[in-house]
Amino acid sequence: MFIGEYEHSVDTKGRLIMPAKLRDEIGDKFVVTKGLDGCLFAYSQTEWTAFEEKLKSLPLSSKNARDFTRFFLSGAIECEIDKQGRFLITSNLRDFANLEKDVVIIGVNTRIEIWSKEKWSKYSSDENINVDEIAENMTMLGI
Image (tube, rainbow, N blue to C red; front, top):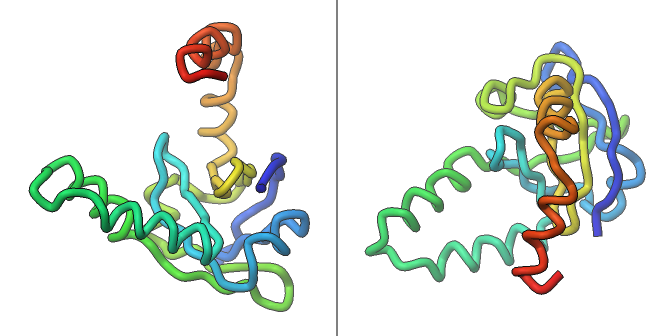
Protein backbone atom coordinates (compact mmCIF):
# COMPACT_ATOMS: atom_id res chain seq x y z
CA MET A 1 0.00 0.00 0.00
CA PHE A 2 1.31 3.43 -0.95
CA ILE A 3 1.18 6.13 1.74
CA GLY A 4 2.86 9.44 2.50
CA GLU A 5 3.52 12.83 0.95
CA TYR A 6 6.86 13.78 -0.62
CA GLU A 7 8.15 16.93 -2.31
CA HIS A 8 10.56 16.78 -5.23
CA SER A 9 11.41 18.75 -8.37
CA VAL A 10 11.15 17.91 -12.05
CA ASP A 11 14.53 18.50 -13.70
CA THR A 12 15.03 20.28 -17.02
CA LYS A 13 14.79 16.97 -18.92
CA GLY A 14 11.43 16.08 -17.34
CA ARG A 15 12.79 13.54 -14.87
CA LEU A 16 11.46 13.13 -11.36
CA ILE A 17 12.87 11.21 -8.41
CA MET A 18 10.63 8.45 -7.12
CA PRO A 19 10.75 8.66 -3.30
CA ALA A 20 12.76 5.77 -1.86
CA LYS A 21 9.87 4.71 0.39
CA LEU A 22 7.65 4.22 -2.67
CA ARG A 23 10.31 2.86 -5.04
CA ASP A 24 10.45 -0.71 -3.72
CA GLU A 25 6.71 -1.20 -3.89
CA ILE A 26 6.13 0.33 -7.34
CA GLY A 27 9.00 -1.64 -8.89
CA ASP A 28 11.58 -0.76 -11.52
CA LYS A 29 8.93 -0.51 -14.25
CA PHE A 30 5.52 1.04 -13.75
CA VAL A 31 2.81 2.94 -15.63
CA VAL A 32 2.03 6.66 -15.40
CA THR A 33 -1.13 8.09 -16.91
CA LYS A 34 -3.47 11.07 -16.69
CA GLY A 35 -5.34 11.06 -13.41
CA LEU A 36 -8.41 12.69 -12.00
CA ASP A 37 -8.45 16.13 -10.32
CA GLY A 38 -5.59 17.35 -12.54
CA CYS A 39 -2.83 15.05 -11.30
CA LEU A 40 -1.06 11.99 -12.71
CA PHE A 41 -1.63 8.44 -11.52
CA ALA A 42 1.22 5.91 -11.26
CA TYR A 43 0.54 2.19 -10.95
CA SER A 44 2.77 -0.81 -10.36
CA GLN A 45 2.64 -3.36 -13.18
CA THR A 46 0.36 -5.57 -11.07
CA GLU A 47 -2.10 -2.79 -10.26
CA TRP A 48 -2.04 -1.52 -13.85
CA THR A 49 -2.92 -4.99 -15.16
CA ALA A 50 -5.84 -5.17 -12.71
CA PHE A 51 -6.99 -1.69 -13.80
CA GLU A 52 -6.73 -2.66 -17.49
CA GLU A 53 -8.89 -5.71 -16.83
CA LYS A 54 -11.57 -3.51 -15.29
CA LEU A 55 -11.43 -1.21 -18.33
CA LYS A 56 -11.74 -4.21 -20.66
CA SER A 57 -14.91 -5.28 -18.88
CA LEU A 58 -16.66 -1.96 -19.55
CA PRO A 59 -19.35 -2.10 -22.25
CA LEU A 60 -18.16 -0.85 -25.63
CA SER A 61 -21.70 0.38 -26.29
CA SER A 62 -21.43 2.96 -23.49
CA LYS A 63 -20.05 6.35 -24.55
CA ASN A 64 -19.02 7.11 -20.95
CA ALA A 65 -17.10 3.82 -20.79
CA ARG A 66 -15.34 4.55 -24.10
CA ASP A 67 -14.46 8.10 -22.97
CA PHE A 68 -13.21 6.84 -19.60
CA THR A 69 -11.05 4.17 -21.24
CA ARG A 70 -9.61 6.62 -23.78
CA PHE A 71 -8.79 9.12 -21.06
CA PHE A 72 -6.65 6.68 -19.09
CA LEU A 73 -5.09 4.65 -21.89
CA SER A 74 -4.26 7.37 -24.41
CA GLY A 75 -1.78 9.11 -22.14
CA ALA A 76 -0.36 6.03 -20.42
CA ILE A 77 3.37 5.43 -20.57
CA GLU A 78 5.59 2.74 -19.13
CA CYS A 79 8.30 4.27 -16.96
CA GLU A 80 11.55 2.84 -15.71
CA ILE A 81 13.56 4.03 -12.72
CA ASP A 82 17.21 4.81 -13.48
CA LYS A 83 20.20 4.25 -11.19
CA GLN A 84 19.62 7.66 -9.53
CA GLY A 85 16.00 6.78 -8.71
CA ARG A 86 14.56 9.03 -11.44
CA PHE A 87 11.98 8.40 -14.13
CA LEU A 88 10.98 10.43 -17.18
CA ILE A 89 7.54 12.01 -17.46
CA THR A 90 6.63 12.80 -21.06
CA SER A 91 5.89 16.39 -21.99
CA ASN A 92 2.20 15.70 -22.71
CA LEU A 93 1.73 14.32 -19.18
CA ARG A 94 3.73 17.17 -17.63
CA ASP A 95 1.52 19.63 -19.54
CA PHE A 96 -1.67 17.85 -18.49
CA ALA A 97 -0.76 18.08 -14.78
CA ASN A 98 1.01 21.48 -15.01
CA LEU A 99 4.26 19.96 -13.73
CA GLU A 100 6.87 22.64 -14.16
CA LYS A 101 9.29 22.39 -11.25
CA ASP A 102 7.98 21.74 -7.73
CA VAL A 103 6.01 18.51 -7.40
CA VAL A 104 4.22 16.65 -4.62
CA ILE A 105 4.08 12.86 -4.81
CA ILE A 106 1.51 11.16 -2.60
CA GLY A 107 0.77 7.54 -1.85
CA VAL A 108 -2.92 6.71 -2.21
CA ASN A 109 -3.40 3.04 -1.37
CA THR A 110 -2.97 1.19 -4.70
CA ARG A 111 -1.57 4.10 -6.70
CA ILE A 112 0.75 7.06 -6.51
CA GLU A 113 -0.46 10.54 -7.44
CA ILE A 114 1.86 13.19 -8.86
CA TRP A 115 0.70 16.80 -8.41
CA SER A 116 2.13 20.21 -9.15
CA LYS A 117 2.92 21.69 -5.75
CA GLU A 118 0.68 24.69 -6.42
CA LYS A 119 -2.27 22.54 -7.48
CA TRP A 120 -1.83 20.18 -4.49
CA SER A 121 -1.70 23.13 -2.08
CA LYS A 122 -4.98 24.47 -3.45
CA TYR A 123 -6.63 21.06 -3.54
CA SER A 124 -5.62 20.08 0.00
CA SER A 125 -6.25 23.48 1.60
CA ASP A 126 -8.68 23.88 4.49
CA GLU A 127 -10.81 26.06 2.23
CA ASN A 128 -11.22 23.23 -0.28
CA ILE A 129 -11.31 20.14 1.96
CA ASN A 130 -13.83 19.91 4.78
CA VAL A 131 -12.81 16.69 6.55
CA ASP A 132 -15.88 16.66 8.77
CA GLU A 133 -18.20 16.88 5.78
CA ILE A 134 -16.26 14.19 3.93
CA ALA A 135 -16.38 11.93 6.99
CA GLU A 136 -20.16 12.33 7.16
CA ASN A 137 -20.48 11.35 3.51
CA MET A 138 -18.26 8.31 4.02
CA THR A 139 -20.83 6.80 6.36
CA MET A 140 -22.98 6.27 3.26
CA LEU A 141 -20.17 4.10 1.90
CA GLY A 142 -19.94 2.12 5.11
CA ILE A 143 -16.79 3.77 6.46
